[in-house]
Image (cartoon, rainbow, N blue to C red; front, side, top):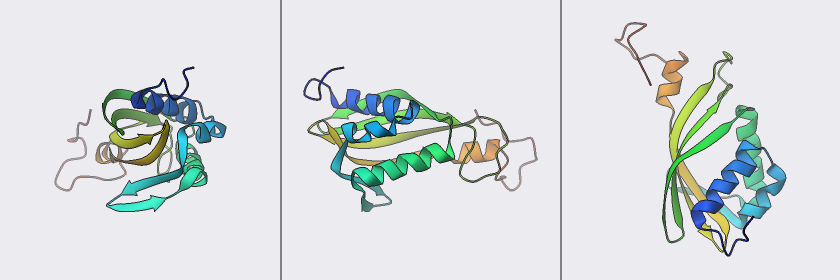
Amino acid sequence: MKNNDEKSNKEIIREYIEVVLNEGKSDKIADYISKDYAEVYDGKRFELGINGAYDHIAGVRKTYPDIQMAVDRQISEGEWVATSYTMSGTEWLGIKPTGNKITVTGVNIDRVVNGKIIEHGGAANLLEPMLRIGAIKIIGLGENEFRAG
């Protein structure tokens, strides 16, 4: 493993996803997350720090016990890294589990400073998986008319 001075910001994000999220090694969070870590959603900034990042990952892994996130592509500019991903798991957002795998695509925007993730935000396409599992229906379409992915 390279030290943080030798890693690109994209490599840091990819390694964080693989080690912490996919392998479930939450004890490694402090290796990747800054003590000043914040998440930004809907224009609001939430100062979480390392403990908040740990709680966030614990919640994600509770929602998706078998979560796997694949990096589809990344773009990096300075401190910022954009990551397009495909994530899958079998339980989802408190909806009664069907045992079927749910797939979600999205984009994360992370800021890496001094080898640590200091800011995270993003958006996920939640409409398609909700339609696919029947949690919501499009009004006016017949039962079998939606053909996602």
